[in-house]
Every structure is written in structure tokens, then in C-alpha cells.
Amino acid sequence: MKHMIRLGLIATIAVAGNAAQARQDFCAEIREVVAAARETPPFSSFPPPSGMRGRRMLGFSVCGTDSLNGYPRFVCGGSPTEPRGWSGHEELALLVEQCLPQAVRAAEEVDDPSVSRPGRRPRVRIGGGVPWHRIHIDLEALRITVARESNPRVSWVILSAYDRDRDSR
Image 1 (spheres, rainbow, N blue to C red):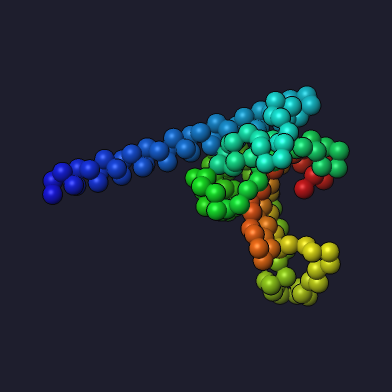
Image 2: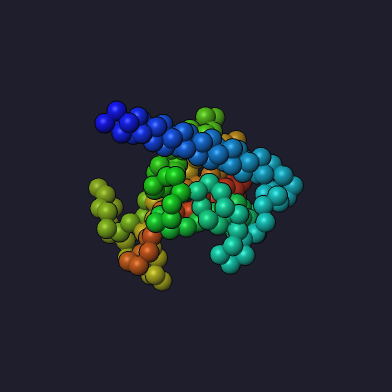
């Protein structure tokens, strides 16, 4: 019995140690993204993802750079079913804020026609739009957006970083 209690305690300490290391790794990686935003051109130290291959970081299996509306951005994406150290977009946003204490949560946007809000008429979707929830976190000129998007078949989480003065959602 004494040995089982010791083994349980050792296992608990090991799990806590792994969680602390995972958080330290995440914080180092998000700071790397912030530093890459200052490069010329921005994010040039990250290669573009090729198909489903890219750099594994921030708990995602695929990360890299691409451009949207002609402006470079860093982006990671994947299904919430992948093991990653955080369970959803809200927990991911909180982790980003903890790692970057100077960052400020700027806004949240929700577009879900199933959620009714006072004074808002139900939205009719045209062209297959999907419900989403975005959390915007600002750090100087950098905007980090954490989003959850879903449709009846799949749900996914996206983290993107870009110059907030550009409309690069």
C-alpha cells in the first residue's frame, strides 16, 4: 500500500512536471512568433506549410506562413481532437495571454446563427458560411487571433498572427 501511494505521488509529480514543461515550450514558441513578426519580410523565418506538412509548434501539427490579401501572416490550424496541451480556443487564448503579459485582449467576435442576442435578427447564411468565435489579442502592432470554426462534420481551431493595421483575418 505504501509503495502504491509513492508511485501515485511520483506519477502526479511527473504529470505536473510535463505540464509545466509544455507551458514553457508553448511560451517560448509564441515569443518566437512575436519576434518573427518583426522580421523583414514578416515571419520569413517560418516556411509556408506544404499540404498537411509544416512545423509542429504551439500544440498544432501544421504551422507556417502564408499571405492573405497580399500581407504575410503566421498561421496554425487543426482539429481539436489532436492532442496538444490545451483543449479549446478559449484555453489557447488564455495561454497566449499568460505567456505575453504585455498583450491585451482587444475584442471577441461571435458569428453563430444558433445563438440569439438581444436586438439582433437571426442571420441567413449564403455560400456555406460556418459559425465561428474569434478572440483577438494585441501586442504592439501585432494581432494574434485565436478562432474556433465548425460545421456539422468537423470543428477546428486556428491561431494566426499578423500586422493588426492590415485587415488579414
